[in-house]
Image (tube, rainbow, N blue to C red; front, side):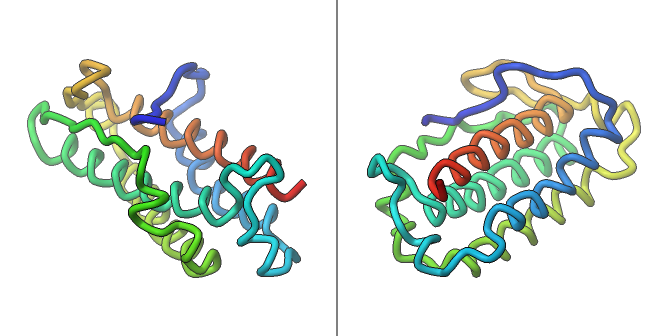
Length: 162
């Protein structure tokens, strides 16, 4: 899963995109609601990532996306690094983390991301950076990437919970 980014941009207004990003933590919370803590720590039935790994991954990538957003909004056409997240789950001990704490960290980062996007004018949405493997990307493209990335991992969370 090296630097997963958007594959299919669905047309939506900037306001709709911000609303979707803002509402995403509530979608995750609904998926977790009422689940025993032990269920959040179990690997998926196929032995892959369970809830805690997906939450950690979302949290860590949210920080990357937030950093990229700051770069693009603050600098003229910055270079956006590629990250190899292949070993993050092991190096960062995802299975040893508290899923509730991780979710709250994710929620706080998402709130910051949304506050950065709210109120951007067209010039802000169209600012670009140069992604090392994707080429020139806009703030809008980054926001779409964040949303699609989250949706993919929410589906994995649902699968892990059965």
